[in-house]
Every structure is written in C-alpha cells, then in structure tokens.
Length: 273
Image (cartoon, rainbow, N blue to C red):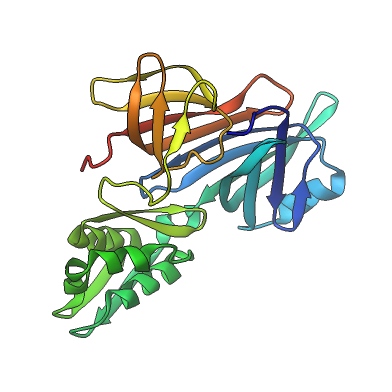
C-alpha cells in the first residue's frame, strides 16, 4: 500500500466544494438498514457560503478524505441540516448528513404484483420509493436464482414500510441489504462484497493492537484507509491477531488541525448468519 502521510480532504455540499479550511468530522457506517450518519464541522467559511448552506435542503454531501498519496470517498449522503455559529473569533458551520436518512424513516409502499411478476419490478419500485439507486440489488437477486424468483411466483401484495418489504424479499432469498453511497447494497447473508480483501498490517495502516471479543467480533484501529467499508473483507496480520473478517461497522474521525485522523472498525467472521 502506498505510504500514508500528509492529510487531504475535499468536502462537496451541493454545488459548493470546500477544501483548504479546517474541518472536523465523525462518520458512522454500518451494515444495518438504519441510515449511515455524518457530523461535519467547517471553520471560517465565507459569509456567502455559510448563508448558502443554511438555505440548502437534502443536497448531496460527499466527503473524500485520506492522504495526498491515498484518498477516497468515506461518506456519500444527503444534507439533513446545516447551521453556523460564532465561536470566539471564528465561525463554525456544523452539518448533519445521512445516507438514506430521509428515505428509511418515512417511505411506504403499497403495490400488487400479478403471478409470475419479476422480483426485479419489486426491487426497482422499492428503490424508487426510497429515493436511492438499485446498486447491486438486481445482480444479487439474480445470483440467488430460484429462491429470489419464487418470492413473487404466486403473485403478492407488498404493503408497509419499504425497509420492511426489503427485509421480507431479502430473507426469502437468503440475502441482506443496506444503503451505501445512495444505492442499495445487497449481500448473501453473512457474506462479503465480491472484492479483494483489504490487507491490514502495521505497514499498511493498522494502528495499535486489534482484539477479538468473546462474541468473535474483531475490533481494530487504523489510519484513514478509505477502502474500509461495511461489507468489505479485511485480512488482519498483527502479532496476536491474524485472519479475515467481514466489516460490519466502520467509524471515521478526523480533525484536519488536530490529532485525530483515522478509522475504527468492527468485523465478524464471514459466513456468520
């Protein structure tokens, strides 16, 4: 892995791109159906930019962070609220954002499917109601084969919260879902994304000593490695812990002018239902 040094970030809120100012952020992303969340702070934006943010509603909020030699998107969601306050001689603009925040709290569906209807139609309807993209959902259900196809074989009426409907469809096909980066992410239950495992060692960003708790859950700290994301497989090599786990939760905390600039993660053995 490229040597990690010299902090770097770009924050985009709507059509406003922010870089070069002091920022702070706390981000939590999980495999649960609840929205991923981001709390961000920016110091000393111009008055025009502060006013612009306070007028924005549900605009896309995207944070790329890492190091000059290695960076990537660690959060991609929508603005929930933004406000500025005076802090001594400085102005601090505080932003609260969510990935699927608006959708999963209120979206409901009521739709009937005739016998033989494709599960694709149900998935696309759910995604539209949530206001997110289908992501890899169609491919995942396609790989699930007859289990997925049988969901609508006899015809059905889907009614209720869209997240409950998605739970039902996924359970019938042996899958699980979450919203990541504004799209559906669907995985075989207990399985990881079909990507190469991230190798995490003291030389590639691992910080301190990871440990595995009594439930078999891995807890580890790392530098700001953007590839650490829910559903990704991580291969850990340390003095006391070795093996591969599926990331279920990752938190990013950063202060461009402070000490904090890294990630913490929880991960479970792949295949755990």
